[in-house]
Image 1 (cartoon, rainbow, N blue to C red):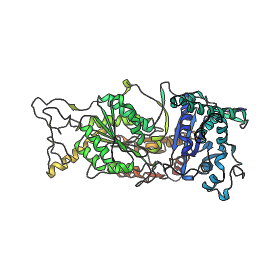
Image 2 (tube, rainbow, N blue to C red):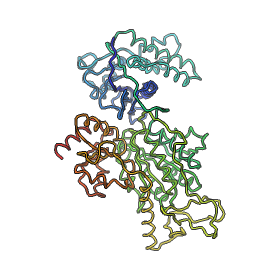
Image 3 (cartoon, rainbow, N blue to C red):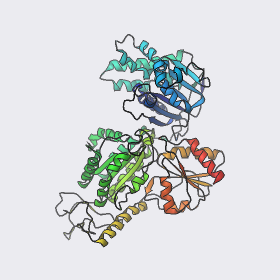
Image 4 (cartoon, one colour):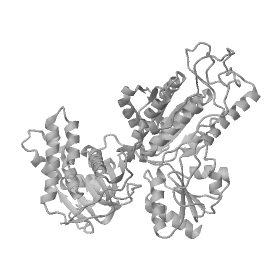
Length: 614
């Protein structure tokens, strides 16, 4: 037995939704992260809540890349594919490297499963030599699980639910990982039902022992810990990071947090996360619809809280009028759009970046908002905290664009201490001015008005969606006043760029031959591609926008250094349209709208093609 020591490896767990794939992948992720590997994950859910077992469209997947080096993406191709049934193999085999490892549960390749997976004439790929170019290890996981628990008195259904632990134990052996973290997890998870904890632990150990004694492998993976900066780390996905940032901003501002939401994939988990923080004064509200959700958050902001809401594209469309209300009221509000494939219901569990123009222009009238876009799961904390600070200090709604890829994907996060976070100072006014006259829409140098909380004597003022008179806030239908107020509100948003950092390069410099601009979750694929091309002698620059509106003050200056600029994005070229319009530059658009992220290879090929033919 020898141990191979690559710098990184990609493993993909696949099976039916009821096979515990997400739990298995999550446990493996946490274990290798505790060991010290850098990781990036990508859970891939079927769109149907209860898809029929064994079907191609019912496959649930969990992709993980672990490394002893910096990991930017979950990987392009798999080194190991765990297939719990025939459909799992068929839908994912094309992404397994030639010579890669297949771990297959033979009980998931019976006649019924082969028919459901649409294998012609019920041909079994484990037997027809079609997998001869792979390292196949097939065994009956279901039967071995039953054998391990034969004396427990559990019924067949309960026993089958444990079979994911057999596979997890097997994979832990493959990757030289310790069982103790999962044993502790199971003990805690089933502390009220210790018999279930014991059963799962028994099967976990059975899988590990089977791998150790079966002599099925000639080599094992041995990936050393990554050299990460010293500090305290935890595993975090994008939705968790957004929730934590909202709580942190609430504490740093001294305001309560109110989160009004309506369940929608893939944003629902933000509500689930925040509901755990009642001890921090967080109030969560599951409304009857999207409009009620955002209006409740606006009401909470009017009452002096940090109001927040989240949804995905269809829900954001419904919230449009209320966003305009918050904008004309000039109240702080944080809106999170966890983008998914559209239009309409579209692809509920698949990722896309096609709501950019909706975020910029999807409201009636002239209603500009600051728009931010995190690049990675851990970046969601930093960008959401920044967005909260802007909303509260500049008295404006803000929108944060994440997507299903970074919302559900996870990575190690070196979390900050509270003392390291910036102070947030809302422009609250707590008593009437010395002259006894309060002008609610009188502004400071950044065109920000004061925030008067209801119930303070002398600070009563008119509120509503009708146009406001300058300074007083009284209803006004005067044409000149209307135009001036529109210009003032727009300029206030533009001034946000003055208080935020200048745009910097992720890779390269103004002397590089080509500039790649990214935004949102394309970061990892772009960064990996450019690092790889740099090793081949290519000098490519990478700028990643986290502030989409207003754009960074120095972006135009950066762009004018380059004759060749390209933008990869998971839409039909929306950021390209925005930047071409603003800077009148011939920017190359690279698009992918398939519900899955760019691969590193796709970005590399696009860059090389641009260098050859640009």
